[in-house]
Length: 402
Image (cartoon, rainbow, N blue to C red; front, side, top):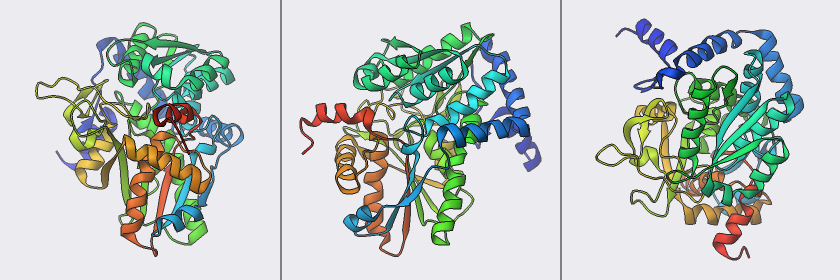
């Protein structure tokens, strides 16, 4: 297949290398095709893009801060550490970037109802927030296990007027919540838009989410260059489905001298069912309408994922991450539950920032990387969200935070 044909194939079918595509039930074909047509038009619509920018600036409070972390730099004794502060966004995480964009799309399409899946609750909260802002009926699907460990965000979603529907099937976590949200959408496509929260799902969702989250990387590149006159030597972000990472990487993926690192959830250990390190241990398969890497057994059955972080325990990964891994452009590693908890407390006590447990995985890897690179290098970490939602769970797990 020549380059021109390959380009057309990618544009129409949503592939990243061999990953991606649209493998959804026939009942969703029309809705996905409508979404693709609308998004293709809105990408070029100056009025729509101005609307998105205005809400990101005046409601989300972008651009988010990019700042030097002096205490961590000193404590780790290696490369200079910089933080992209997505935790300072309205609702406390990067998820609001995509929720704003897709809510405006839903309004443009005349939808009256929005739905979403959520694990750690940050995407659910962001969706509930835009639902309140724009007057949508809002339903959030969340696994029963996650409802218990992310109670604060559940309360916030309800305060915003959203209905939170618990999912008890399977592992009762993010995978099952996503499945239920897709079933809902299949039954209610005429008046409902499904705001997918991560860079997963059938085409065009991975592209839509990436584009709305690319603001992270675009801002970071501009801010870092203004502050230092150069680019970072390494960029680090946590990866579950992968929305904050894919957004951050967009600012640097073409800069070959900038090393990119995604950090997955290593869980309890490397045994199947005890981690969520999809790229490290996954195999090619199909999940939630896309072809990607999935944690599965020899018979192709999905193996339950685990992480101390509700936002990372997904047995798949966004198809573009699968492509970036197999192409070698991005290197992927993992951090265990124990390592993430340790980093969570370290960031609190050293830098005075309570990070999300998701981001704590990235911090653990960055600490090792800082020592390897040395004091003349720069590492930029995407601080994807704040850890208010995780504080009670961390205390429960550790019994003490002293």
